[in-house]
Length: 402
Image 1 (cartoon, rainbow, N blue to C red):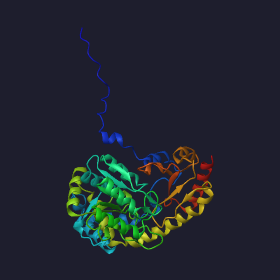
Image 2 (image 1 turned 90 degrees about the vertical axis):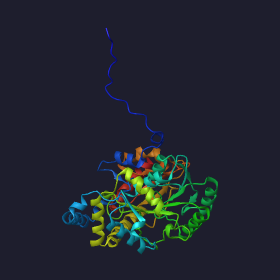
Image 3 (image 1 turned 45 degrees about the vertical axis):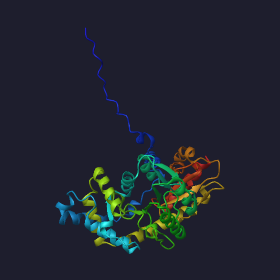
Image 4 (image 1 turned 90 degrees about the horizontal axis):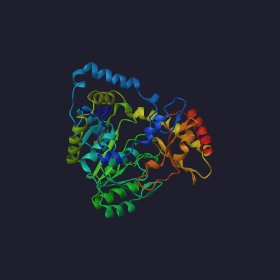
């Protein structure tokens, strides 16, 4: 009699690549899934306020391109991006002090894709990437998936210390520095003008490439706008500038861009061809039509006015919500502020207790490339109304007190 082996009911998963095994998921995304209940006041997400989207203007832009050029809007497009959108982006960038042509730009599916494309184009496993500490979490994921060795640059409440940066460049010979110098995620801090110039000088003197991410820069509530590092003398030919419509138009459109020298931009275009061929044509054309028919700057000004009120509401309630000895910053714009509780608070361990009060934050530990500061947390202040912020802070206080 022949005995046959049992047929497995399910094929096992193939072994995962080492880079996938070594990089975890996003704690922010995990928290958002846990706190999706409508009764939760969620300070954890980096979500723009949906009631402030210009839904009428955006809908009109989509209707126009679908009515007037449906064959083009629904067709494949070039990898580099639609000429009308690239021209409009170049004009906006030039008006803000950085002379830019349409051909200097590559349109991406959100600025997060730009990070992934740069990692693919530039990084070999084992290459060193310098980052701020703490750092934008999804950048740590992108560089980690590329197999990079990630090294934090020392800094303070104003951001990167240029002298410490130069010492690390000499010692580590990094492939690039990644920075969000304006209203940084997660801290909300802004790198002062003098330090921007000093960082550019280090880059020029030591041959350092800089990736300057600017998704929040237009959301300024007070103070004067600071020039990009990319516009500083010495940094012009060695800085990649990233931008996005996610925080000023709508994140669901998934529109970002990178400005880079020709050879690097071409390498990113090749990487994009392997990723998604091109960013959706209809979204690009709708954004270009919106920019032609509407005043985006005026819309952003209205949004910033509302966000300023919400920032002020959060700042006004923090002293009563947080334990004695806690510290926090006062961002001049953006979406986030950074809190440090007194030792020995551990914001990761405390989070389940806080969530039981129907409020949430993001613990600060995952944002650190180096030794994590477990007493830190990030709060997003733009998604809720001032009244909801006040109630959320009362809940946060109850959760922290236990």
